[in-house]
Figure 1 (cartoon, rainbow, N blue to C red):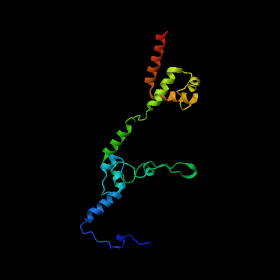
Figure 2: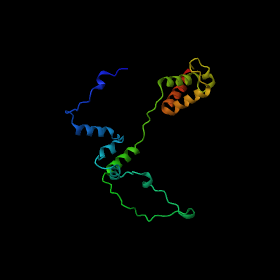
Figure 3: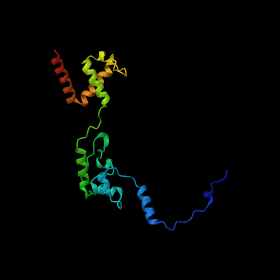
Figure 4: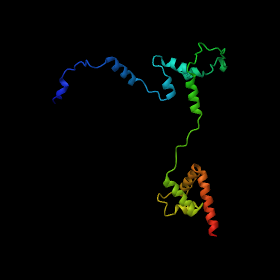
Length: 180
């Protein structure tokens, strides 16, 4: 099989390319991306990983950060004298403080229920109350959920929207009182 026409030509030297810039961009692309923005902004590319982490007050090796007590003869623990060799000075404590602050913030509940499931649950409660067997036989039970599955869906709705559920049940009771 014949080769492609351009493949047999010799490569020409590209005189117009800045080798220094090319090397720098290749090195930057090859370096791993630091996900944590606090660490990324405080990172010094001229220093080693151990030096950077020590300046930020972070541990390079978790085993050295929290050493396990060494066991001596017959299972007795050997205590160290409490002095650590070569205490490192934290030059960038703001990185640790920012990370601690971010970790202390409460996590947002980002998961919600679909509008279809909310409508389904509200319809079932409105028409059948707490009778799950009747709900399972309802014509709107398109997915043919069992009574247990319907009960589970209603409990999920109760846990996600407790105030809305209480208001809905209260409005249903009010409607029943008005009808009678």
